[in-house]
Length: 265
Image (tube, rainbow, N blue to C red; front, side, top):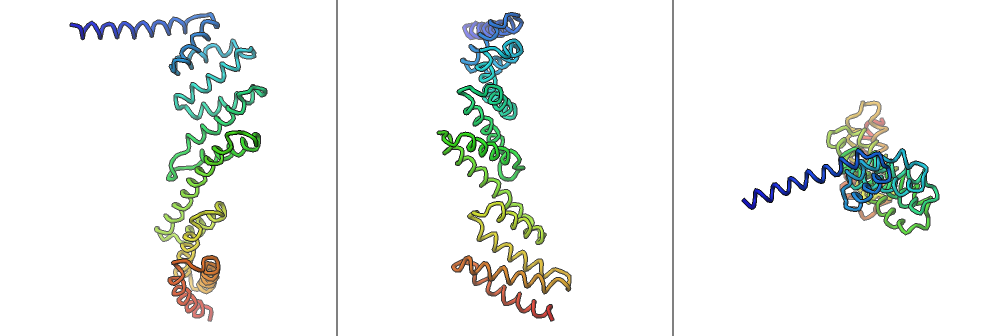
């Protein structure tokens, strides 16, 4: 019996709360609606707050209350993990309230929302690129910001993810025996990420892919491509004199030189 009474009261309270929200949403008094929206916001009821803020935005546009209203409205989207919309509204805030003391925070949050949308390295990295561009723009605009340390760390994290994506793509081409595409992809990685920790391995794979590409080329292209393999091995050994790959590459150089001489003549 007590359990039945408890559930009845719970349902009654739920209906009452819903009725109260519907009642305020139907109100034509923007002051009352904004006050209720702020209360919902403080209670962490983001959807209710968002709905009411959206309702009174047209009325408060251009008024002193607009700054806090738009600030809270952007955060309702963020707190509901609607990061695309949140990024838009944070950016819109910083453009609309140019002299606000919240401008720096909102520009950072706009970039951070793109960071939150950045997927794993296996997926498309468009949002990683957008986040990096936005963070770099933030750093340029606020060179003295206390957030710069975090911004730099987030940029490094995003670049590591993009680098991994690039490496995985090159490795996929290599494993599929699409050696020319692998070489092209790995060279792009070295160009885009010159300080990559994977640089030694990438250059090693370029040589391995280059050898296979040369060996499987048409007769007229073989000597030219084996010559390029030899140049890459020479450059690799100069750059990495203590590499664990050098013994293998010495053997590969002998074979490449023999084939170069054969096809050259």
